[in-house]
Amino acid sequence: MSLVRLRTFIEVYRQGSISGAARSLNLTQPAVSQHIAGLEVAIGRNLFERQPDGVKPTSTADDLAADIGDKLDSAEAALASARARSMDVAGALQIIGHADFMAEVLAKELTPLLEDGIRVRMHTGDGPMVNQMLLEGHCDLGISAHPVTDSRLKSELILTDKVLAVAAPSVAERLNQSGDLLTAMTREPLVAYNLELSLIDNWLAKNKLSATQVIPSVVAQ
Image 1 (tube, rainbow, N blue to C red):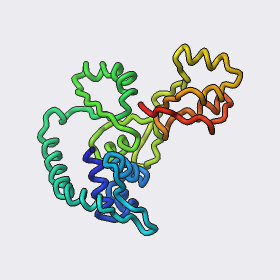
Image 2: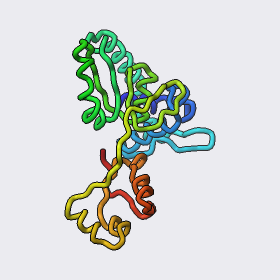
Image 3: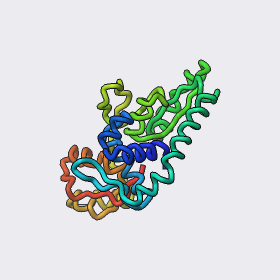
Image 4: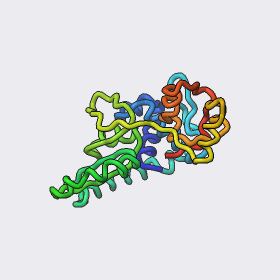
């Protein structure tokens, strides 16, 4: 569990509100909800009951808040102190983004910075995490495939790429020999990047195929 998600949980718990926690943390409400959902998956229990006027903590949330509330405050204070003392962090360019992009695209473009003596620290995170780390001042540059909607951040398009469907040769042969590509695809287990930004719908639409019947069997980055 990340400190960021735990901090979000504590803020929601103390305020009894997703929107209130979002304002306090300078996050969007969907980002706060995503952090809570991630904790609930990790714990295996619901933490809050959604109500018209906010959220009500469950007994699991009460126990978790009692266990980590003061400890989290102390841990964050210690982390801030360690960061301030760290010479390795001071003077380094902090970049956060999707791991695959940074490994496959960005890393090979860093040579000029290194030649100029600039140290680089690369961190991985999804769209909401990228925005949060930038807004909190922990990172200098963020790279995300998600649209930037927060007016406090400025974004520029740095890369566009094609979306291709790939398959093992035996699977590709079955699909190519079928008379109905969409039906044949529904018989094969589909791997998607993630459900929120699967890109499958766009690929199907571009190829004039209905997306209603295609559900990923595996979701993984």
